[in-house]
Image 1 (tube, helix red, strand yellow):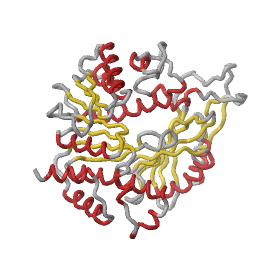
Image 2 (tube, one colour):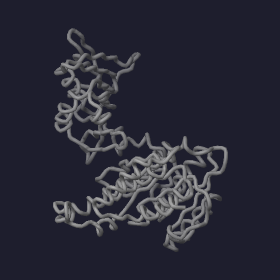
Image 3 (tube, helix red, strand yellow):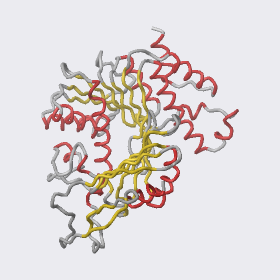
Image 4 (cartoon, rainbow, N blue to C red):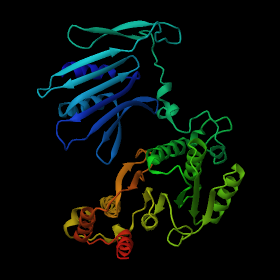
Length: 418
């Protein structure tokens, strides 16, 4: 294990591509950890992703914190993979904690890593007892090239920087040359992150007919335009998207932009989620930060229409906060901030359980990092084959135990009674 720890320590630098720790010894452990370098405030940190069955959590740590975390994690897993710019290594850990490491150097074929002055150097790295290899680095280089870590590696974004996209320009996210406006970089990342979720659910959408997508509470419609552009222009799907919002001026502006781009099947309407009845069937329902019970009405409408996919980022879960009473929850409810957070978590947990009870395979995932917004959870639900009565009953029992009666429960009970 000491050899493996040393190898991991040597790998934690700007040349690391990814560390994957998998194959847990016990079923209750996190399924997988992924670690990669990111550049935050001009300092190299390491983003640790923890993958459970239904969720992915992120945290950014410095090198020492990452090593401490690795020391805790390694004894619980059987396999570690390390990928750097010059090497791929796999370690297998037995029950006694001993690690065997197999390392394959990437063939340079005459190419070596160069710094600005063109110099190269060799540095010996010990993989296993009796075996050494060489990583090409520049021993004279004082300042490493961190450009590939900037902005969380933008070259991997679906809407890549440097390729002008008309609606991103008009919405103030991108310049005419395709550069991202510095103050809008978080919005740019948010758009691309959401498109990754869309990419994940594409297999559940038909390509043989027109797809109808509703975006409730679309606001300035960054995501609405992005989804239309991605599915129709980049993926070739026949999509019709409807954006709905209460703000008349926003709807007017978005309608003008859709007309300007020739997006004939992208329409915007003024109205509320609760009252909208403009369609009889929907393939996908999107909600981003629909406030409080507006999210519940959107989820209810999605279930009623038999939507194949639901992507919802909730906001402002006030309803259950007002329903929580003291009793057994007094240690929580006596502290306002804890009560608020408990109510928010309970609200989304109940929503997930109720959707499973209605036949949806549901996950609650991290949308973007907490440092950008506390409203960072996304409910992703895909219509399955049969409702889960067990999850429905468990969720109602939870509500009854704490004296809760959420709007979504009331709406779906009415739907089940029809």
